[in-house]
Structures are given as C-alpha cells and as structure tokens.
Image 1 (cartoon, rainbow, N blue to C red):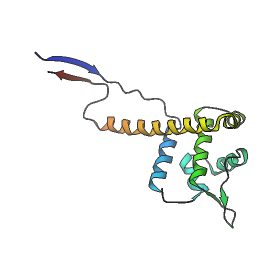
Image 2 (image 1 turned 45 degrees about the vertical axis):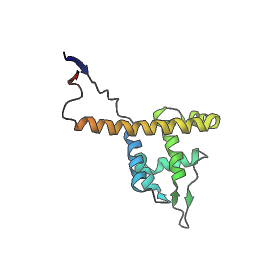
Image 3 (image 1 turned 180 degrees about the vertical axis):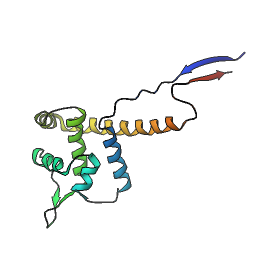
Image 4 (image 1 turned 45 degrees about the horizontal axis):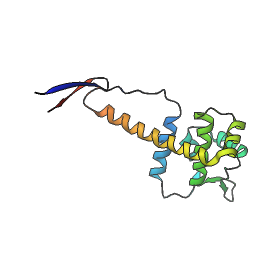
Length: 149
C-alpha cells in the first residue's frame, strides 16, 4: 500500500532593501578577486551609493582608511571594502545612526563583523535559492505529492 503525503512549499520573500547590494558586492569580489585596489567609483557602485557618501563615511569612521595615489585619488583595498560592508550593515540594515554605529563598533567590533558576514552569506544563499526556485518546473506555492513505499 502506498501512502501519499501532501506537502506544501511556500517561499517567503522579504521586502527588498539593501540585499541586492550585498549580492552585487559579493559578485564583484568574486569576479575581481585578484585586484588589489578599487577606485571610489567602483566601490560606490558596489554599495549602490553616491561617491560623496563613501567620502562622508571615510570622514566619519576611523576604521576606513583608503590609500591615496599621487593625484589624491582614493584606492580601496579588500580590507576597506570589508569595513564598508560593516558600516553599510550598521547604517542600512540595522538602521543605526552614525553615532550609534560608531558606538557599536567601539563596543563590539568583532561581533559586528561576524554578524555582518553572516548576513552577507545568508543573503547570497537566499538569492541563489530564489533563482533555483524560479527555474523549477513547478511554482513554489504548488503542492507536491511525495509518495513513500
């Protein structure tokens, strides 16, 4: 005798906020992993912000110290981009003020770095799963009959 189970899968999609920024940053890092420096324009594109906001964050957060060439152009390293991810996480995802973000970094920098990295990885996995679900033959809300023998 074969029993059939009705299993319903629902895909819950959270509202889009800055998750695409994390995905763009991750993809750009994957594509350009051998690069040592990024221009301020490239970094601004990674975070979907204006160049002026990157400059402002540089002035406000002491952990952000890009190098400058002889012309004075800012050159961001992977470490700088990591710090920008943390700042972006605190300001945009956690919705902290500048003072709140500075305080959180001063109190528990390692914990904030770990949380930001976890959120980045989970967002990347979520985007991959959404792409897989989109490519499946059935809709995510359809019932799937699973038979056991």
